[in-house]
Image (cartoon, rainbow, N blue to C red; front, side):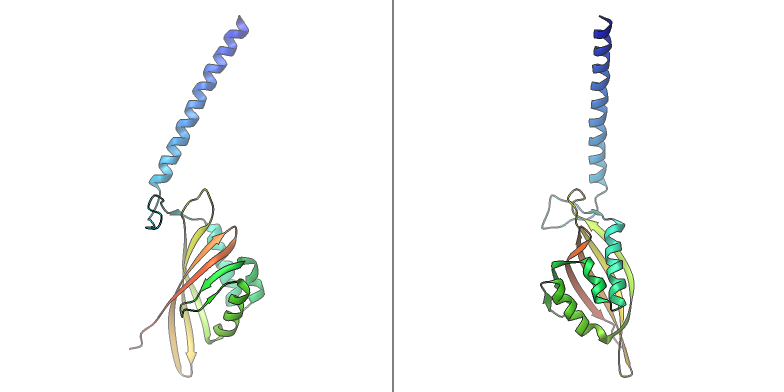
Length: 174
């Protein structure tokens, strides 16, 4: 009888603890929805969330290799089948094609600064983050110096860029 009483007491205790755990999970899910930021019209039922420093670090490390003109050091950050879309309308359908284009064409940019980056995540449970980055580039042609502002959008999954989009705006000379 004593063992039965102990068993019933333990079952009651575990049942209450399980209810508390369910309530805690429900509270976390509600809090996560409340922390959402922004929206996408293509996914109206989903929200955007803050991303992670890990995805931003991928973009920072990629930029470090790119600014050093070390195209081979860029490879580990790019998925082989990634898609790349340049501001001038060109595109590349693989990391190899992308690296060929930037090696040939990005020598006219004298230097650039990495001005900002942030990451958003459509669904933190499935992975993949959208990193937005801003740069200011300096180009020199003869005695003319031109500033160009770059906005680049990186979709990073499992530590690799799988999509890259670039947008630019040249500074107006007065």
